[in-house]
Length: 76
Image 1 (cartoon, rainbow, N blue to C red):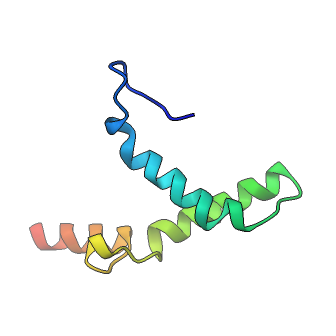
Image 2: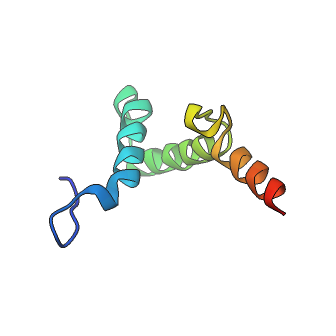
């Protein structure tokens, strides 16, 4: 079920809704899990991959961690 704000507007949740959609399509739907602990471990690995290694075109071809490091290095 999609989450909504008090006004019934989902736009304030768009970023996290997008992340969960990507997580499900790139991880959850592609595998079978034998236990909740196995799923939990895979989600933790995926989040590390998503932040450190997964290249995003809207971040100039960098991962989120690389982009933040590059951005803060250039404004200091």
